[in-house]
Length: 84
Image (cartoon, rainbow, N blue to C red):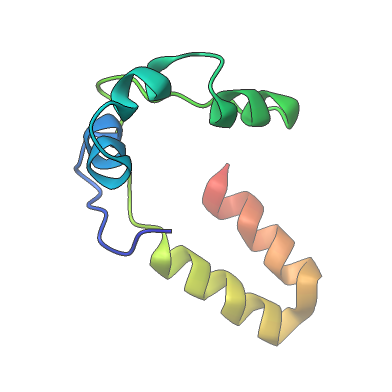
């Protein structure tokens, strides 16, 4: 989680800033670690130009709140709504 991410920022630009110069090639590689791990659980990870990133800090706060009020069942239901 990066609480400084902007919802309007290009995902690739944000990750290159976070992981340093030279990371662009690794992120665009369709067989990078994140892409591979995403495929294993049914997610398609895209890091090319034009994909936006966002700050998920408030979503994670809300998930924690849901768990304290309704347990993991409510938290899981909210997770499906927020991240699907």
